[in-house]
Image (cartoon, rainbow, N blue to C red; front, top):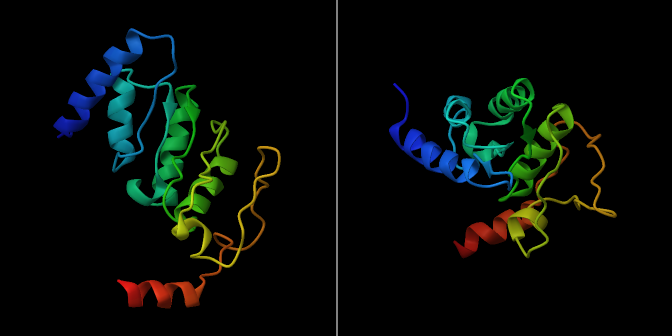
Length: 151
């Protein structure tokens, strides 16, 4: 059974897409690749934006990348939140031929900048492909302990 809220939102988004020449990006709040497929079925989007932290991890995000590729749509992983969710989306972006752009927050998010020891850098609008094992991040245990004590 299809998720009724996804269908309703998808149909509303499809109406916006049909009445505009501006590409519509969506999907950052969807929970599965099936939800994303439902958005595709009603022609609700031009750019698929799965969030690896919400949709079920790297594997499910890659499934959305495959959907984007076979439907000739763009993939732009939604990468807000922590450094770990950002790097998961970044890995998918580098692995998917449909990926064209990735979001990067310059805001003061401690979960992005203080949670890990590595510094994610953008140079002239470009992020280099990850080369370290796994997500390529080392938890900053001092920050985690401090965060736990405050909360």
